Amino acid sequence: MKLSLDVKLTPAQVAEAFADLDDEQQTRFFVEVARIASTWEPGTAPQWRLVSRHLRDCPCSTDDARELVRDLAHALGGES
Image (cartoon, rainbow, N blue to C red; front, top):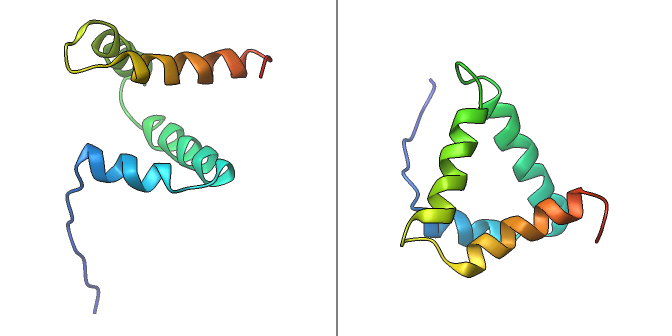
């Protein structure tokens, strides 16, 4: 017998769980997101552009959120 449970998490719940992970686990989270997104049609670039624009332009976004993404991108460029 296969049992399935559909649980909807809020962005706050996902963020809290992510924040509780160590750096290796957080990296694996991004790897898994990239793996899942690679299955989307026609690809992931349009979605990431939408997220970027939302972070940049939406009143729901914050300076802290934008700085977090900038820090990740900067470190990926080879500087820590």
